[in-house]
Length: 255
Length: 130
Image (cartoon, rainbow over all chains, first blue to last red):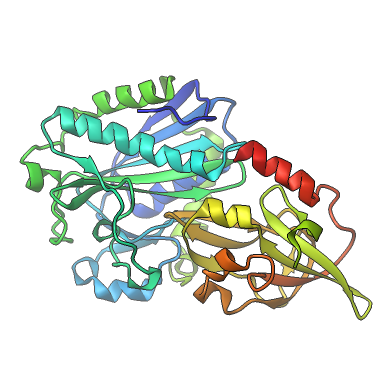
């Protein structure tokens, strides 16, 4: 894996969170994106969702929910990142907040590759025949499937033609939030999406493999990991954003 | 519009200011370099006519390659007009970013920000980050 040219990181601050609601998960990521990073520092947050939740891509219309009956009863939250809707249930989610000052779009896009390359490699090390999607057919925006995992983008991680890892970004002036979902197992709310367990018969739900993945990531960025918890100010900001934005129907239904 | 006659933000928006009936009216768009870098624009959100925009602050958003990015206004003022057909025909930005691909027209209030770049300075910036 190549390092991202121009992205110099000495330390990744690691947050390993307990499963929680969609609104809180998005509020924490928002607080992290809004907090100026210390020089040569990034934040990696690993988390899960309880209860299961549907997240809409930032530009998706909420009316499109009717096209996916399986998730009709679930809570819904609108992400700030792009892409399609994700059914967050049997997955591991990551958010990576990194400095983008001085980086061009090609360099920022290369961060997708760092994550997907390292995940592909760690899955392959466990005998899972994962690979990266290359040159998928171009689909007009209006014809893209509602669910992210039914869409294909260059670099998505796939297994037996099914997408098992996808990522999206929100770019602010100085920093970028990259979201990614690793589909460990099929959800009862989205039976059309088999996960790694169904496709490979390898059970990754215990997350014991995550340490190996993090080692590959730190090698790719040539940096160290350091455990991190949200500051009082970040928690306060997240609580405010949770109620004012991610639990607010005006935000969820804005399109 | 002639790209060489425009002013630019370091965030890749261009602006052209003209005197219309005694009012300073700015036409704003995004540069060919930005369009090329973003590669595959799929969504754009425009400001509302009548909205107030502030120089250096967000006025709209775009999505490309699953990434949502803000658009930053080069000037402060009131939005007079937006290119309503643009979000449904973003290909225009590839073919004609400096004329048909304009995004909004703003009645300028106050002076233009001093940090706007001329074409040569903007090209240098693109060269450094390209």
